[in-house]
Image 1: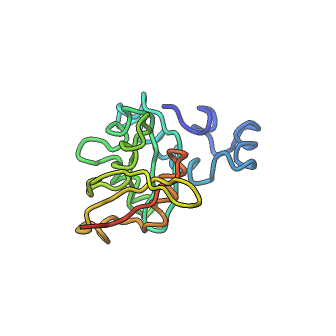
Image 2 (image 1 turned 90 degrees about the vertical axis):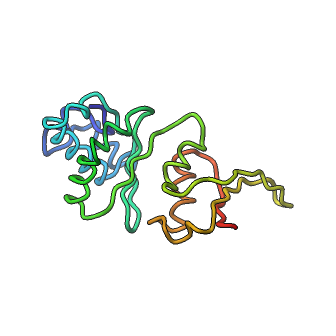
Length: 168
């Protein structure tokens, strides 16, 4: 399993000087260390985790978002969601797994699920252009992330700022 911390640190309760430096510099968080160690522990029971890669973990008010390498999302979710259910019970938050992708749309869809993206548009404003994601208004309030949290996560993961709009 590849994680934000090295294999030695995954197996022990202390961090090596390299990983400690990453933590102090803000490259990794305590939460990422905790989730990585939980997943490493679960990899003994769930073989699918052994060849998965965890890129980043984001913490929001109600949800932990685990970003995996492309193609590793299902491995981290587990059959019937058994792995994420185990993680959720240990951290007392719901879990959302999103795969990193070349196309922003795939990442955005993963974060918005179960909502569907109606369109992604470029909006031209006096201060410059921006990107707008249009989602059907029936999903407003049904995604367990706030619009601000979603916009921040999308920006952090894709590197592009998007505005989310719920419309008919």
